Each structure stands twice: as structure tokens, then as C-alpha cells.
Amino acid sequence: MLAPLEGDDPRTVGGYLLRARLGSGGMGRVYLSYTPGGRPVAVKVIRGEFADDPEFRRRFRQEVAAAQRVQGLYTAPVIDTDADAAQPWLATAYVPGPSLYEAVYRHGPLPAETVLVLLAGVAEALQSVHRAGVIHRDLKPSNVILAADGPRVIDFGIARAADATPLTRTGMSIGTPAFMAPEQARGLPSKPATDVFALGSLATYAATGSSAFGEGTDSSVLYRVVHQEPELSAVPAQLLPILRRCLDKDPERRPTPVEVIELCRVASEGTRLQIGEGWLPPTLVAEVTRRVNEQPPRAPKDPTVGRRRKRRALIAAVTVLVLAAAGAGLAIGLRNNDDKSPVAKAGPQAHAQSPSPSAPAGAAPTPSATTSAKRTGTPTATSTATGAPSIAARPGESATAIATAGGVAEGGVLFERQLDVPNGYCVGLSYTSTWKGSCSLNAGVLYFYGDGNYIQGQEMVLLDPGQPSDFQTCLGETRYANNNQLPFTYLKVGSVICTKDAENGLVGTVRINEIPSTSGPSQYWKISMTVWRGPRG
Image (cartoon, rainbow, N blue to C red):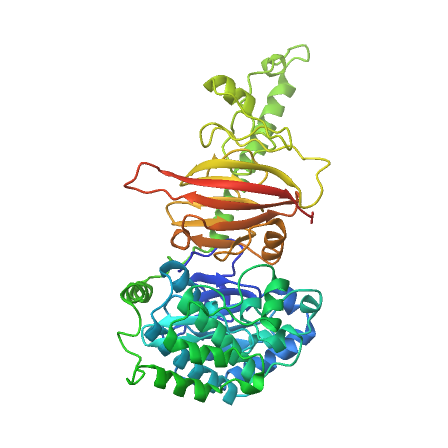
């Protein structure tokens, strides 16, 4: 999905004009751009925390140089990079299509024949990667793109650059636990067989829609990766022999990528493995076609133009005021000293109501919850945890900030509430009701942007299906989250979004209970929110 650039996104990187945001992750953000000849590229800009570490830069330079040697039909080649930029970046060929994660999450498990082609294609990509002396180390569904002419593996080798940086040494995990190999989980060196284990986990997810080692906290998943057998009961019979071998705990007993391809040929019911128009199911073919034809948002205007205009207008206004004041002073000086100016006698006038200091910046001034209740005749409920006003009876009636709760330990529930949210409205962890945009996207605020068909938020993460939605999970998942856009198409009933407001010490979940329908009776997003006391700062 192509999302428009936000205010904190750069407009150019290394001479590439950025046209849209493609996504973000633990190591940085990815943008769409074009080469001078008009070919689309994906530009990945590394996060500043990594850029500040000299060891990361050294490894990044080495790994990208190795990745540039990778030549394969099933990889997205690295075509440009700058490890010495203020924020290091690299550009790869852009592959229009959903990631494997998006495809399975939105459309369900893939047919067995599609998974066989996927296995063989990714195995061939690993051949190319390993031949260049690179190990992927983070092969997972979001790093495999489903294109019309086969899968593409992206982000190969980049994870190693973050090994042993201060961030990883203090607890940040670059690998994804459900797709790690046992030797990774035990802190042992990675090898080509490590990627083969990840390939087995990836194919299990593609075939069943679930992780081979279940859900839960990182530590519990890693324990099962090391000590327990994978859950393969839902895997189609023709895939089982391949996945069992790939998921062997012993790296020496796993097949090589060449052997994986041969195993897929044998399992493909006597037919040759072919990548063509029929390798994807029809729903995904339509999705790929839409991505291919998708046009980037209009190029953003130069933000300095508006500032220059405002500055000129401000200078002109100040000049008028100065001249007016000078003229007034001259007139007063010519008057008799006993003459009282009508201006001096003027009493206070009725002032326009100023916005409540608790209202979010950019929100329209709104009456307090108490005033609103009196006007509408609707009683206002009270939160048993905080004593603060609960939600307004109708969406958008008020945006009264909750009181700061005292005596609630970290991880304790501050309150729970149900909300009906129309498109174009905002919700926030520290507010008792929805309010109509535009809202300033401060931490802990989500904007249901109906015209753009996405939810906008700062520290926001969509949990995987079946992932726990408790305090510890949300605290961990939002640790490195940044300004994100979540397309409506990713959401379904039961989806859970984690978000946080570190400044006010709040962590919360937003669970989707009902999705608005243009043809149905409800025009609201029906959500439930749980807010915990979290760490500040």
C-alpha cells in the first residue's frame, strides 16, 4: 500500500525524490522513489539510533557490499546505497505485490501447490544469497513479496549489521522469534542452514496461517523453537516431508536450498514447478494487479513555500501595526492631557471561549463533559478506576482529558471503555471520548481517516492474529514503533492495535468489534479500549 509522506518524512534521500511511504520496521522506514530512467525503487532509511553506532555503520557497509553481489531471479537486488550518510540508506528494486504476511492475514492460507512454488522460489533466492557469502538471518513472511512472476526475498543480510550494537545488546531483537532457528535462539553463529529452518517456518505459516511454534511472549516462543517439535497437524500431506526436514533442530540434518527445490519437484504431483499466471490464487492475482497499477500520491508541495508566504504576510501585518501604533501615538500626543480616550474607558467585553487546555491541539473548542451532559440531558458515567468522566453518549460530544490516576501500579488497568467511532474522528488513550479531526497526532492518539482508508497513529502496532493482547505484549511491541499508517484493508473484526503515550505513562489496546459498512446499518467503527498505567519517558 502506498501511503502519503508525513511531516517527519524526508523529501529526498541521496538524490532520490521520495513519492510515498511503503512501510516501517524495527530498523527503519521504506519509501517509494524512481531512478532517473523512471524505474521504481524502494529506499530504506535506517533509524537514527543505529546510525549513531560506528560498529553498525561498519557492518552495514560490509553487508550491503556483499548484498550487491547477489544476483538472482527471486531476490530484489540492491542498486544503490550510502553507508556514510547522516542516516544510512539503501535502494533496492521495487516489487509491486503484497508481502506473504499481508496475503495470508487478509486472504487466509495458500493452496498447497502455491506453497510448493513459494518454497522452491525462496530456496532458489537463498541459493543466490548464500553464494554471495550472505546469510539472511531474518527470513519471515513480511520479507517475502508475492509478485506476478514469483516470490521475491528482500532485506537479505541487513539484520547482521545490527548484531552487537548497543540496541541489540540491551534487549532489542532483530530476528523474529517465531521464524528464528534454534541456534539463533541460543545465541550461536548463524549459517546457511539457519535460513533453511526459517524457510520451513515461513512455509508452515503460508500453508496454515499459523506459526509452527505457536503464539505468546518472545521467551515462550523461543523456548518452543529450541525444545519442542513444531505444530504441523494442519499442514497438507504433500508438504509435510519437506517441512519436517527444514525444521530439524540439528542444522546438519536440514536440506540445502538445492535439495529443497528437488523435494518440491517430487512433491508437485509429477508436474514441473512453474511460475506463471496460475501460481497464485485468483484473489491474490487481483491484489497483485491492483498493486502494479497503483499510482503514488501526488508529490508533496515544498513545505518552505508556505512558510515563506506566511513569513511575508507576518512581516506585512507587523508593519501595519507599527504604523498604526505610531499614528495613534501622534494623535494622543496632540490631545489635551485631561482628555480621556474612549479606548481607555472601554470595559471588558464578552470573550470567545478559548479551547480547553486539555483538548488536543488542532481540535475544535468543545464544552466540558459536564456542560455537554446538561445540554443533552444525557448522564455522564464515571470510570471506577480514575473517577474521570467516561465516554460521551454520542461520538464527538467532548474531548475531556482523563485525570492522572494515582496509586495505580505499572501494568495496572486504569479503565476500559467502548466507543463508536465515525470515520474522520480521533480516539486517544488520555481522552474520555472521540472528537472530530483534524487532531494532532500526539502519542496515544489514533485518527480514523476515512477519506484515506487508513488509521494514522504515532506509536501504533497491529498485533498478529492470536497474539496475546496484554500489557507486557503491547509494551514490548510498541517499544520501537513509530509514526504509522494502517490501511483499513488490514483490519477485521477481532483485530487488536497496541499503542502507547510514554509522556503520560499510558499503554493501551484498541480492539475492532465492528467495521462500518456503506450498505449496512452501522456507520461506526465499534471498538473497545483497555488502558494500563505504563512507564513514563
